[in-house]
Amino acid sequence: MSDQPTSGELLGIPYNFEKPSLSRLLSSYWQPGEQMLVKKPFGIGYTLNLANWRSWVVLAAVGGLFFLEQAGEDEDGETDDDEEPVEVIVD
Image (cartoon, rainbow, N blue to C red; front, side, top):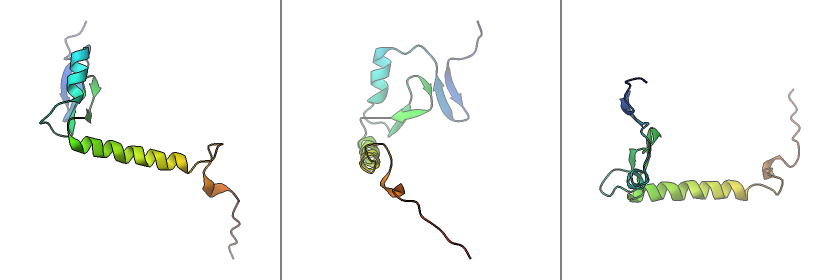
């Protein structure tokens, strides 16, 4: 086929299109001593390092926001804000 590299960096963003192995997938999400964001095991960009406490703070914040969004919806999936239409009169 072609001689293009399957992993590297483009404009400062890492990419990796090598066939992923189970050990590489598991070790990429748990890297003690590394920063909050680490290179993805497959694909383009970064992912959360679950060995870093900041990642758990981010996940808790996203989970809390998701819970608040779901709690504000009715059984039909509609929000409480649009129960009645509002009439606006402009002179």
